[in-house]
Image (cartoon, rainbow, N blue to C red; front, side, top):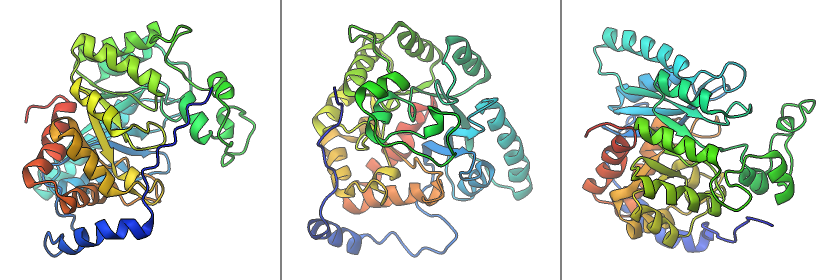
Length: 344
């Protein structure tokens, strides 16, 4: 069995320039004076990385505060191996941010930690999830880099499978059988959501915390969507729907939005590393409608700009291609506030 998809959301250069050239010539939001980051006022980034080797969480929070953002949900922060305690790491950042903001007479952003049920590569458990919810994490991610789907699509760091491997070794995409053997898969032997993951969803929903579906196969996503709709949960999110880890046709995005699930489009998708045509992203948002759409960075890796700049860029692309000011405010400010449980 293979879960690979033939969807291709890139566009040949000769064709892309026809749609992008008018958009970039017409987009004139005002003169930019570096290092200021304009165009992110009140924005909330609900998918940001700041673990080992990535952007510094405190420096990013300071820049976001100076730029007028409202908040950042750190999907990863602090060590994600060993003693994995994201809320503890987040509180240290908050404390330092508050001291700095008082001295600078600025309003600090709100900072929230996320928790991944398989992020530290140890067996997941309800006990560990509950402990993190009790500590105050604001978002929970289902399996991501170590999901069976990810292993099948792009492979894995070899040391996740063989601890004796070098730190930079990486496997080729694995067969589906290998991926199932080594990666996390959320369905049981009859294709239904396993009792463990059903309990995860229900626990997260009971706490009013955002649930990010991770990197599921389409059958996994269907079962998650059915449960979310059944229990009336309104803070479920599909990250980077155009990425190879999710790869949804627009019709499927519309179906998920109709169930009250958010589609979270990211700068990662339109970056050179994934190469999704931003016009196709705009067209998808226009087809779905903005009521269940968010924009975020999914940034942190050194090959990307920092997350505040990524928020400016993805917002700017969608502005240039045609989202109105009200629509941009909805997808950058109002809907992300709904995801993290804020009134707006």
